[in-house]
Length: 244
Ligand code: NAD
Image 1 (cartoon, rainbow, N blue to C red):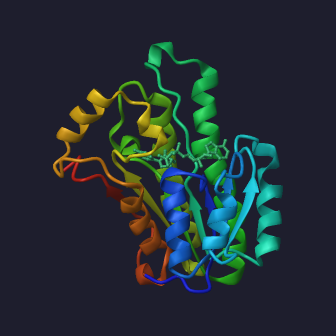
Image 2 (cartoon, helix red, strand yellow; image 1 turned 120 degrees about the horizontal axis):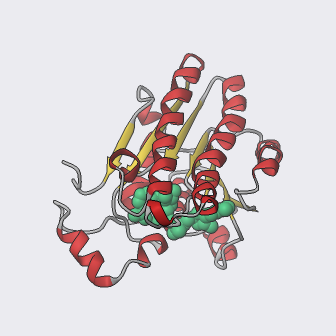
């Protein structure tokens, strides 16, 4: 499960699940390039705790036309990534019949299209070097759907689609591509749900609680490391048994 000497690009690393992934990769020996809309307030503290093995790029991933140049720059700066974690994501919930085209497209742009463009750019370099692990952040909603989240469900189903397709295209060059499908995890994303509704949802989960960002990070770090060398094209849930 160690990632000594590996270089990782983690999107959405400023908080929540992405922060837990970034911290855990660093603790296991990796050097991390984090990306998020803006540099986190605690960046200096995190960088010093990481003994310099944390770098940052602030960028809006919905700016799709600028993405490949941004990622190419980071590949040059790092010397090439061994690990990519496509984690950044948003929700803009509404019932299908009330959803604006703008909100539908925005979620698709950030959750799916940006993930595709980043995976393609980093994957191209990994293929050249005949090594690498890409982990895409899906969701159980992408498998099962959810009322009020038609845009989010479509984006995460798409993430599963690009994961399996890319895994087939890159396996012969020793580049692995997997997806993680979290269930109901404590973060800013779920903090917006009223307390009573959160308690009710947690009660319906067989393990009777929400997951922590670290629960997801453990699986991501496993998939990023050589310990999972024979696993590719998979979608693995971290959901407390929500969909048994
Ligand atoms: P969060 O809102 O706490 O963090 C999202 C991260 O993405 C932040 O770092 C934010 O800056 C970044 N981001 C968002 N839009 C961006 C943009 N346009 N450009 C650059 N960065 C951007 O969310 P989280 O709960 O930590 O979720 C992380 C991932 O896990 C997402 O893909 C989400 O869909 C997925 N997920 C979360 C849950 C959950 O219950 N929290 C469940 C399933 C899947």
